[in-house]
Amino acid sequence: MYTTTNESGILNNYATEPKISYAEYPSQAQQSRYAFQAAIATLFVSFLVFTAIAVS
Image 1: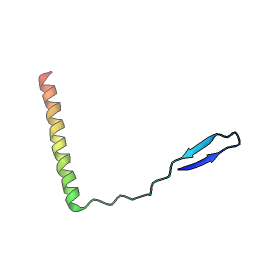
Image 2 (image 1 turned 30 degrees about the vertical axis):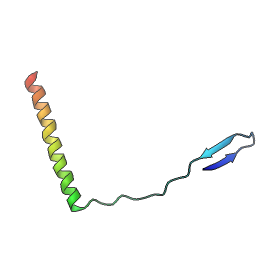
Image 3 (image 1 turned 60 degrees about the vertical axis):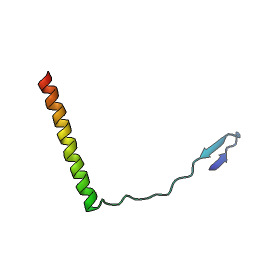
């Protein structure tokens, strides 16, 4: 932790910054899994909306 003191004697504490890491582009298998999850989520939300419309 980096600490400084100003002329009034007040301490200022600064957190150490983490190392930057860049995201990697998803592989073909991950992209397929994301597409499958999106399809399932779309079906689920559609089912909920149609159920709410049918009940009301």
